[in-house]
Image (cartoon, rainbow, N blue to C red; front, side, top):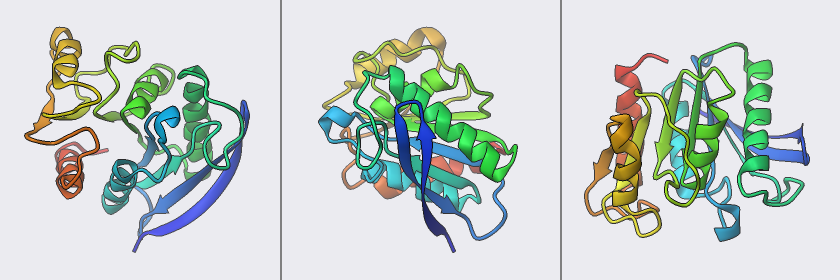
Length: 204
């Protein structure tokens, strides 16, 4: 049985609010999930974000989703990704202090995927899980070969062609959901299952 707990921690722009999904047993890993673009209404309540958090908790990981600066009750203002990377780092450091030095998984949807790809360059993350990351819209850094990348065939925000153009020179595999759009309407259970199966095959 998953337990949800709200938290608030200090960040570089003021307090950051979030929600922890605690699994029924002692957590085997920590998963930090980042939400899509704040200026387009992205929050930690986004359905893709909550789907990811639930999938991670179901795997026995403690999952943390949070609001970037300027969203909900998090202090500050949108900072085009730079301050948001600081937010993601603050949440990850808090999670390690709170739950111990467990394997760290960074996950993000759309803009959140871009932020987590940058945060991963400063953290010793065991895995990256990026859902429709905002390639083409932001300067996505390269990511490890074992990153789980999931994209919708009919993504109207981040075209699949842009995703493949970014992934191709890195030789990165991409899981493509036929017919799926950017927000994975009607496909969220399938998205959660893809994440679950990935970690059944890859120990945290």
